[in-house]
Every structure is written in structure tokens, then in C-alpha cells.
Length: 272
Ligand code: ADP
Image (tube, rainbow, N blue to C red; front, side, top):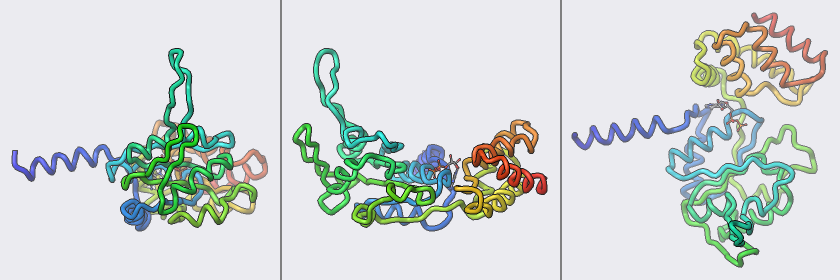
């Protein structure tokens, strides 16, 4: 086999393994630059608009292992760095996902970082300046992050409680980019590809999502996400009647308020 044929085969195997991500702008180039310059990255944006998919796509593209942590209000620094555990009668130190990413030169993605306990910020600060250090108090280690380590965090400014927003002293340590729902043409491609529903039928769903998103703010905290649109199209593609599928995916998950639900259903009935 010629060199070119081998390279083409390797490239297509690589493309198969790459999680599908449809870019909306120059976010892939910005991510790659941040990685090459060893800068941490902050992704802002509503839930279900593709942040997690973007990070897994980029980690695969850059050939780095990915350690994803969904942060919640009980998550402490020790959950990220590691702890001593009793194993077979012996106490052994076990690295947490952040420490593994630093040791192995991977990408650590902290989803919804503002949800985590305050002590998490203390661990992140020395990692996000030019020292790039991870101090492990418990083991007495001070680990220097290798060039191929990258920290990526995300948060959703939309529904953040004022007390739970990122402090300027933390956010100003990151290169940041905003995410939003993809432009309609891109969103149609995504929904069609992820659900298997025809492109034509996805166009109608994406147009409907646009109208429902206009109601955000007045009656709804968040607009319908791309994730929910994919769910909706998947159910329709599996044979569920449109009105049933839209109610289950574009109405019920968004609100418990019956009047608001009725408003959403009216828009849906007007479309289909
Ligand atoms: P977030 O992390 O912002 O909450 P996700 O990355 O989990 O959202 O996206 C939710 C789903 O929406 C994905 O699983 C994928 O099916 C779809 N999706 C959203 N945006 C994109 C995109 N740009 N390219 C490919 N799929 C996308």
C-alpha cells in the first residue's frame, strides 16, 4: 500500500472516531490556539447548546485524553484532586480526575464549575496562571502541569444565582468564549444527523424552536435547547406523532406552569 493510501486510511479512521461537532464560528481555531499557548478556557452558554460535544470533539482532534466532571454543589476540591482510600487493608492515594489530567497531559473539563464548592477555586488558581501548578496538600506533592495539559470550564450565565456567579478574580484567569444555540442552518444539520429525521422535517422543528425561544425571558428561564430538539426529532423519527413528541420534549421539560405550557402548545399547533 502506498504512503498516501495509508495516510488516507488513517485519516478516515480518525474522522470516524472524532465525535461529531458542527462549528458555528471560529471556536475550533480558538480552542486549538488556547491549547497550544497553554491557556485555560472558559465556555459560557445555555445548557444543551453543544459545549460538552465541542470539548470532546477538540480533545479527540488534539489527541488528548479527556477527563470530564459535572460539577454539583457537593463537589469538593478532594473530588478533583484525589484522596486516600482504604484498599485491601491498605491506605492508598488515588488520583482524582484533575490530578490524572495533569499527570497524563490531558484535558480536564469542569462542566458547570460555579456549582462546585468554594475550595475548588483554591485548587484552580495556581493551575490557571503561568505557574501551572497543582499542589496536593495531602501527599505533599507539587505537580507542574505538562504542556499538553489544558483546563476547560463551563458555566451557564443564564440561570446563575448572583451568589453562584464566577468571581472576577477567577474568570479573569481564562480565555473565554460564548456559546449560543447554533444558527438555524447548522442546527438543522445537527438535528438531522443526530436523530436520523429528514432534513426537511428538521427545518420545521428548528423554525419552531426559534419561535419558542422568543418566549424566553417573558415566561421561561431558558429557551429550548438543541439537545431537546434532537430528542424531539429522535422520537418523531421513531414514529411518535408530532404533537406528542413536541409536548414531551419542547414543552414539559421547560416549564411546570400550565398557562405557559398552553402558550407553547399554541405555537406548536400553529406550526403543525
Ligand atoms: P451542553 O454541554 O452545552 O449542555 P451538549 O454538548 O451536551 O450541550 O449538547 C447536547 C446535544 O446537542 C449533543 O449531544 C448533540 O447531540 C447536540 N449538539 C448541540 N450542538 C451541537 C453541535 N454544534 N454539533 C453537534 N452536536 C451538537
